[in-house]
Length: 208
Image (cartoon, rainbow, N blue to C red):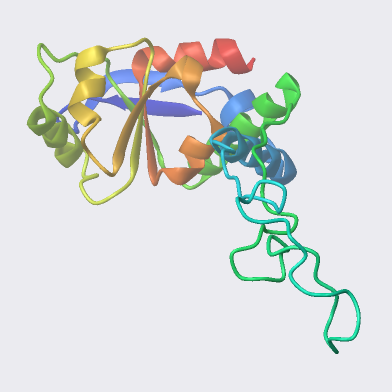
């Protein structure tokens, strides 16, 4: 699939880039996408939630009433979960939510996500650009030229560029990543995916 390369002013250049059918035109696998997104979100969880159980509550362990003859249920301690201020029964404990996925499945998920974006014509290829200093206003001008002001945009660079990253960091609807850190969640979460010209080759090397 041939795509025209755009410049930062939003105009088509004379250069064209070939997007490999093995990445951008496969049969999408929805279950692979589901698993990869699930893992991405799970890995982002801190897992530090904790509530105190009856053994951890500060309080008297004195038996609060006699065992029989009260007409109510037995009660051994004020720390029982049935009383206000008592410990919680089966409360949350710190845990690690991350789980393993095979590399081939993760590759298939990314290919499937990119295929969906390509089918809906939401992938653009932009010529490589640089910024002398971090300037959000300059980055917004580029998005404006590409007519993406009001859309969620994922910009994929071939290699790390601090000035471009810092220029977009404060924008709610824009995210800048390098091609080696491209993931399924970010691709699907964006309305438009903007690939820099150098990133196309890096993505092909990683996914093929």
